[in-house]
Amino acid sequence: MKNKPLILTLAALVLLAGIYGVMTLTQKEPEEKDETVTGGQYVLSDIDPMTIMSLKYTMNGVDFDFKYTVNGWLVRGSEDYPLDQSLIETMVNSLCAVTSDRLLTSDRSSFADYGLDPASIHVEMEDSGGVKYAYNIGNKNPTTSKFYFNVDGSDDLYTVPTLIGRSFANYPTLASLLKLPSFPAASMSTTSLVTITRGEKTTEIVHMPDGDDSCYSSDYKWFLRSGSDLLPLSEDRLSNFLSVLSGLGFQEGADFSDDPAVLAKYGLNDDYYTVSISYESASRGEVTDTFYLGEGEDGKTYGRLADSNVIGTIINKFDFFGFDYETYKADDLFKMPIDSVDQMTVLLNDSRYVIKLDRTTSTDSEGKETTVTDYALNGDGEVSGDAIVSFFNTLRDIVPE
Image (cartoon, rainbow, N blue to C red; front, side, top):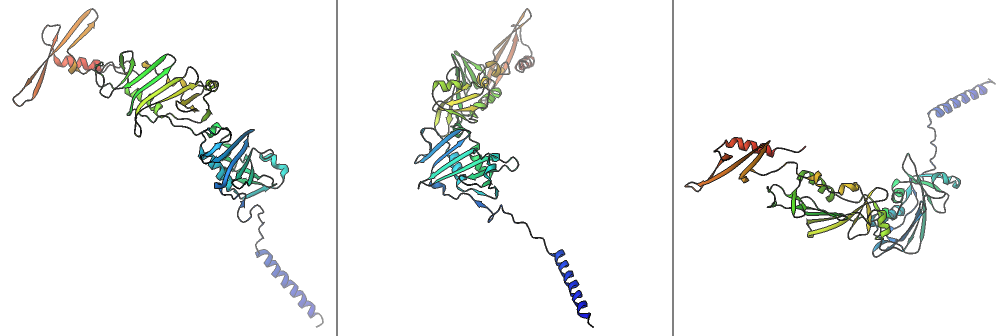
């Protein structure tokens, strides 16, 4: 009986070991704590954007300096520069509420690898109370498209949403922040006259809703004025040209200046197109708007409105605006209806044929008019009217190659 306590003790140890083993096998492994998340997000700025009165930033070695006034955001020192207010407001708003879900590192020695030493973009803001804020924006992560970010003076490096970096990175020059004016909102249905001048050559494209008496058919509505003559134009072809004019717009801002030396850089000081469009505006009535188109030193097309010093790029090639009658003339040889013809002369080899059409109109007892046409060839009596009409319609269907 002396060995029994020992046996019981061993049994207890075995039982405890089994229980521990079961607990070890069934208990979930503890998760590793994510040290990059605190309360769900890092709040890196929380500022009322309405209080910000100054915005400065440096990007690619270029300094930008803006101030807020009763007239909105202005370029400090160039207050007449037409800024796109929405772009500056987006910059300010994006920096006033910066949050991050990832603290990447607190090791400043690695900042250069992320475009933060020196910073790709360094931004400073000041509010109405004189409080200053400074931030650094680095490179964009090629996988997530997020930007690397640092609160100036801190050793912490975060990733922040794309919008924050893009608000600045997409506008690397002052010209890219220009408020771009609109070109004339004309259309083919509202335009009455287009004048294009380059050097000593002036082209006038005229719309005449009722046609013109000098033309043999009222079907023609658009003409090229050539001295005192009006040359009919193909409406289908012309519509493409006028659609481009009515749809013109700046691709991006290039400059803001009326300095002849600056204009020359964009082909707008000499040998440029002056385009004037007269049209019916829904809000202004009959108006004429004028703009200029030039070919820059880089081969691009640039535009400027007559009442603006804003210069911007145009997508169309410069040579497109050189109107050529051979390109836009009417496809058919003539549109004259046979009812308006009194005589036709046809030269065939060495023979000359003269076809005369003689019309007689009578009115019956009910007042209804009837017109009968007699056809005569070379004065030798009547010929088949159906044959003459068929011949005439064949001529109308001829289209130049």
